[in-house]
Image 1: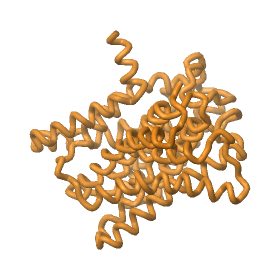
Image 2: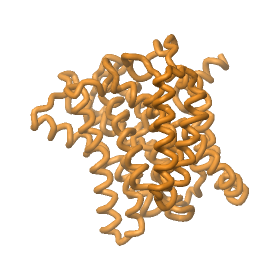
Image 3: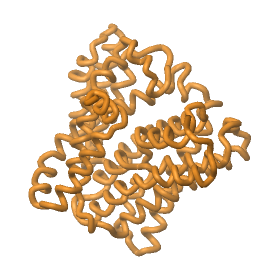
Length: 375
């Protein structure tokens, strides 16, 4: 029974929720000790350990582009990708407009925070809303994958961790990529070699060059030998694959859940009174901007000739758009990248945490719209 509960916790990324809840309680019971521990953890967690979280996200993007994957066919992928673009653009526009209208220009740097969609929790919400056979679930998964891919680019381009130095980046990153390419050419299959060699080089290059070092494995993952076809996100048959990329993913799946626990513990501890303009801008972007962007861009794309699956009606699309408003993990990460520690960061984090409200809102909306019950 205990093993069953542990599996539920791991499969649904609930260690992150547990870490975030523990941080909230700790920060509001003893802010001083929490602040000391949080500060001590943040470099190790945010700059080093989260490398593997973004590596697994990159793995899903890489595999989705293989034959049979959701991103392999332009006809299949175009509409969810456009929906993801709309689901990022509208929240960003609403955030910037809100910051301007409320005379909080200092908040503009956080425009990317409400662009995020958390794959794991949005998928969990979708499973609670839609029947297993509903096209809404793969549509949302593809949207979230595209959102993650675009989010990685946004993080690299707009949120450098220090002043960017192209010299340091080139001196470290080019050899790292050449090293990874050479390893693939000579058929190196041990993923530890990719991590210890080009992975470390890429981390040092990004750290010294000003890019966020948590992205260090993003350019290395595509060089790891992988399968020729994609089975789909969360497909249990991946457990029987023995290529380098799948073995890496299996080896790091549980450690990454532990990393997410410490990420929540180190970053989610904010006073419950930390509600302010940044909170409402982040929350408004996620709860309202995200579904408006997803639904609006999908309808515009249809007018341009794209087609959504016949079984994905407007009611399902609206509920799907609301479920995509769960920003949580990536939104928290963007908040820590956008703002320095202080009141504004705490407010932005509170908005990211409250984006969990998108899940019950999506479920309630699905019932209100009389969508078919999950089977």
